Amino acid sequence: MMNVLLVDDEPWVLEGLRTMVNWDKYGFQICGEVENGDAAWSLIEDLQPDLVLTDIHMPSLSGLELIDRSMQELAKPPRFVILSGYDSFEYAKIALEQRVEDYLLKPIDEVEIEKVLEQVGRKIQEEQAFEDVHQREQVLYVNSLFNRLLAGEDCSMLKKEVETMLHMKGQENIACLLIETDSYEEDIKSQVRSLTGAYRAELFTDAEGRIGVFSAMAEPSQERMKTLGKELYKLYSHRTPMTMALGQHRGGAEATKQAYEKALFALKWKRYQGEDGIIHYEDLPQNEGMTSVNQKALTILMETILSGEQEKVEGAVRDLLANSDSLLPVSDIDYARVQLLALEMGVRKQLKELDGDVDQFMQDMQNTLGLTTGISSYSAIQEYALRLTQNAMKMLMELRKVKEDSTIFQVVQYVNQEFREKLQLQELAQKFHMNANYLGQAFKQQTGKSFREYLNDKRMEEAKRLLRQSRFNIAEVSLNSGYPNVDYFVSQFKRMTGMAPSAYRKQR
Image (tube, rainbow, N blue to C red; front, side, top):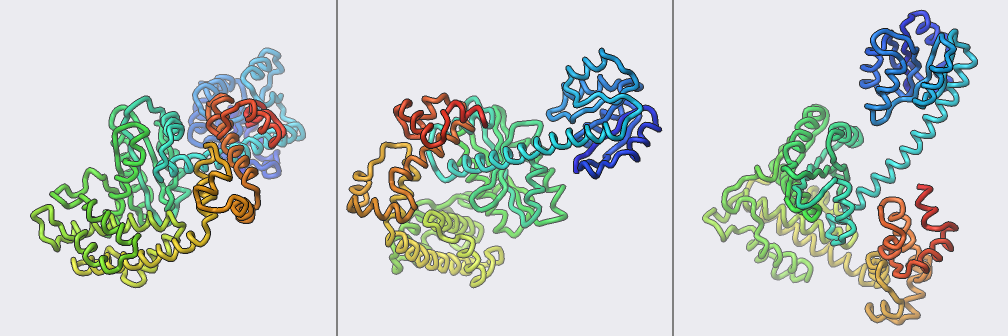
């Protein structure tokens, strides 16, 4: 339902509007009634109605002043219909200049006002539908942008988009707040948008469904993100388990991935402690060796997993969990937990790269060995790490065999990543050690399109996205979507879409 606010200093007018008009029929509900402009302004700020019916002459703040203030101060002012007892050309002229929907004379005619409501209601609904579509597209775009960066894609265009999105000018601090919860996700996202309205922040969902927020500024951006986390925890902690973590890194758009990884590490640390609430990466235990990952041992263990050398697993696991670089005992649980956490993250990454079901894999681990939060001894951590490694090795070998049995999958993935470059079927065949004719046939069978059709479609998808979402000129769009020759790009674009790139951009 659309909300309408009634404003008139004569109570009988308000009563007549309330009872005379069939508001439900036109999709409206009365959200408030007030008798002066000041009270009306307060309700407009608080309730954000879709429509306001207002008199002109009222105490404290006139109807015209109320409209002007709304237009000047509100990001999204309501639509206005003026009710007046004065048939004044001057008033009507001012109302028209203020983009008022209609100017109705008192006494109000029932047929006339319902006709206005039908027209205005249609406009509001069409505008809302357009905004909903735009917001969905924007959410998809932002998620894609950040997740491509977090996946390690090193692209200057992506980084420039982040800089524009977060109003970055150089080597600012970038902060990332990650939120993990079982429910109320959409409500939490709505609250995040509301609470970050005063500053520039971008909401996204990471590859595993966590809610994330990025923010950047020249001065440390962590404080305002801490405030955001505290507000959210206060609002939702009594309704649903909620764990949040904050990471920050300096370096502008280049630091996006590091800020996220710090937040993710802190989030998983918090989860391993079996606690909810908010934690900052900087507040993790700082004792020597307590939070550092033994990267050398982790690399060796991951290589062992990928190579399938089962006879080396136990020694590699033992080397990872043993804290040989400090005076802490080998059986220190906090240190071992950090290494187990790093191992789990490494396994998740490898499974994801081969399109494995990460959630199901981890669920199977929990069903077999229980939650890691319940582990209370070094030997239990060692057992869990060993089983995790063995299960991961088996799963990855199975996934790799499936992929290797279908080399064409690799070819399609390569085209998806490198479509901006000059690609020829003959060269791809050489690269993947295949016969060119066979590759062409297999490619069409896999994708439903010939290699050339598929490549052109990928390039056109990117060109359309850049036209909709970037500030690139046509030549830059052409180059960044895989067409070095702008004239050829324009002709291809017209052939495939029926319009010129400039016309397509104007219709967005």
